[in-house]
Image (cartoon, rainbow, N blue to C red; front, side, top):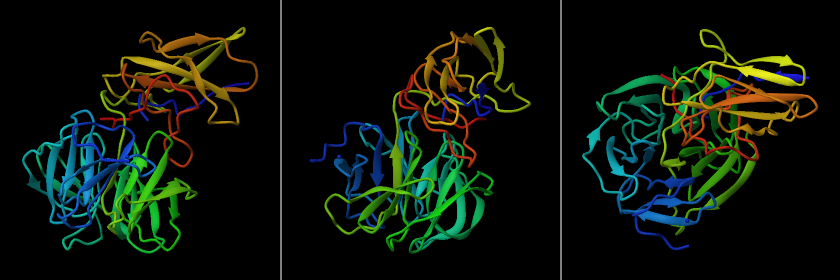
Length: 353
C-alpha cells in the first residue's frame, strides 16, 4: 500500500571558552540569573563551554538567525540586540516581560512580570517597532518559553512543574509533561533537530523529549550556582527559514496517483514565497521516523513521479529555499515531525504569514 501524509509540511520544520567572535550552531545560550556580575554562556548540547559574553545581565534570549541577531533581555524589561557573530551590542529598548524569551521568525515572546517574577502573562514584542502587547495568559505562573516552529512551549515556575504547549492564541494544543528530580523549572529551549526540550534549573540543564522522557542533563560550566532563567537554542545559521506545504484547503494538500509501478505526487506551493523548490522523502508505513530522501529537488515543480520501494510506504514533501528545508508536517500531538536518519538539508522552520 502507498500512503501520503497529509502533514506534507513546509520547507521548514563548549573546554575553554572562545572569545565572542564566532557562531556555534546547534548550541545553547544560558542566562545569568538576574545579575550583571556574571557572563552569559554559550555551550554545546552537552554543556561544554564554547564562549562567554559579559559580564552582562541576561534573563532571556531570542535569536533571529536571518538577521544574525541575538537579543539579550534583562530583569527590568530592557532588550538589547547584539550581532550574533561579534556580540557587539546595539541600542536597547524597554518592553514588557522580565524572564525567558524566544523568537518565532517575526516576534519576540517573553514571560515574567515586574520583580522579576513568574507570571501567567505571555507578552509578544515586535523587535522592529519595539511595541509589546499582552498576547495571552496561561493557567499557571510561567517563567520559561520556547518556540518549536509552530507553537510555544511554556514552563511552570515550580518544583517538578508543568511544561505545556500552546498555540500563539494561548490555546493548549495537547502535549505536556511534568519535570522530575525536584527541580524548579526555569528557562526553556527547543531543539528542532530532534524535537527535544532543554529545561533550566539551579546550576543545571535537563534534556527531555516532548513527552517527558529524560534524555540527559549537565551542570552549568563553572558551577557558580546560577538559576538558569534564560535559555535558548541557536540553530543552523546562514540561510532563510523555510515554510510548509499546505495540509488542507484553501491550499492544495499532497495527493498521490498510482500508474503501474509508479506513483505521482502533487502538492501546493509553500506558505513562504522564498521556497522555490521541494524535496520528497519516503518511509516505511508504521515506522514514521524511517523517511529518507528520494528527491532533494523537483526543480521547483509541484509534482514528482517516482517508483516506490516495495512494501507499505509513506511520502513527505518538504519545501526548501536552497539553504534550509522546512517542515515535515505535524504529528498527531501537534509537534513537528522530526527529520529522519538522513536529510537533504539542515532544517530551519519559519512562521507562515
